[in-house]
Length: 364
Length: 212
Image 1 (cartoon, rainbow over the protein chains, first blue to last red):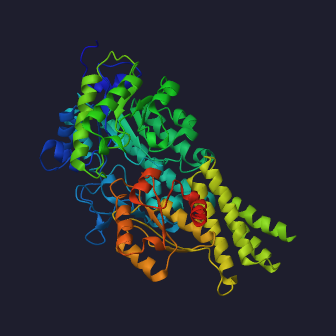
Image 2: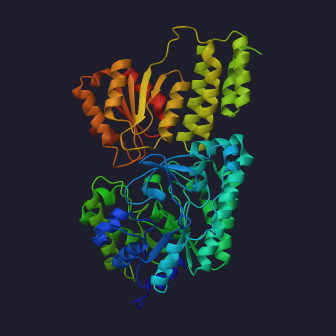
Image 3: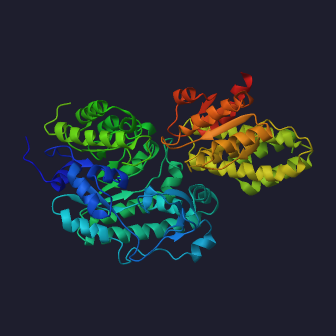
């Protein structure tokens, strides 16, 4: 048995395709309501998130970047607001960022509006305040990650509107390139800033697919998206970062490009999108650490705690032997579930099971 | 160019995602005396081909979006040429159920139906059950399409169907449900008539329901 490792060491070992002391756990985003239920107190900010990850002993702690200091959303009424990226959201109690409101639409939807738009500054003061707090608090022990949320394509498509951005790939290709390039530059500068602050791990979240497949044919992916995505990963890796890439959906039609990115880990491997983690481990396990395995569409919201335990043990036995596997939910710990208390109980059981049964050596 | 060539050209321009080309192709066909319903049929066939390629995994979302836009352009050119009393294939009311604001799949379904000759009333997103019911009552709809992307909102489809029953309207419409977390089993459980896995399946699904 391997001597007990600190989470950071465990994380690094799994990303280097070796067996750590136990299978590490990764959760990219956790809704504040879940954090409150786990800590039994109101959510007030990044310190609660840190406490929650520590309480659950989740090895990777991804910290999203924030808006510049002093920035306020522009409320259109008491429910709808526009964010820094010109995106319209419906406010939901809990958080005004990323996935926790309801995205309504992108408003920077023409070349003219884009030209008039003052593009956000990645170096603005305040952007990585939360990351700096986390690095100071637990950075020596945990794999604190600088999260470059919605990397390139996803931030672009939410800003312009997915349907419009896809349409423009055919009818206004130079505009699409211009938009993607700006987001690439933003993400690159932001990523570098995270590394300069001391982060050694980077999470690039950037959805480019749905359950059916990538949003665009491989040929268009190659023309428009891949060069920027690859350059972002390579530039951050050159500076020593370990990079996990998150994208929803069925990536099988573009798996060769995903490998070509040069990432260390891929999350979330969604089974409902036809992404079978056992099969992927067999095919790509020597080149890519697979991050996933705990179904968040059916298992965590609907199954019994015992069923959760059984599934987690099953995935550990199938995928973890040999290393190169990090346990994670197959998307994120969100709140879009019918019964949040049941969901939280199941999340706790998943984490407990991982600690108990994820200890190496693991026999398949 | 012969009639068949002119018709074929319309479909080809759709399949080539050529917006200017389809305008010209339709105008040429109309000038040659080809009727709008014949041209609609050609568009529907083109959309069917695109849908089949999507289902096979050869086409992707962007191809559904661009072809939908091209078909809408074709429809804009054709609409002024429809005679009064132009027969529509049926009336469809569609929307994303209450609490859910996802709409890409629903938008594609609307476009496909519209471009294939259906009269479509798209109520948008976050649509209350009462809104669906009043449209069905007032406009005598044939089909109700319900969409949801979230497991937390898909049960609202059941609410709409129960409300239809309570209002004595259930047998007036065929109810079709769609959205990523759904399944055939779920559709049966909530009492829908059919489940559409991917947007392009909608035409086939409605045709099957008509035959029942």
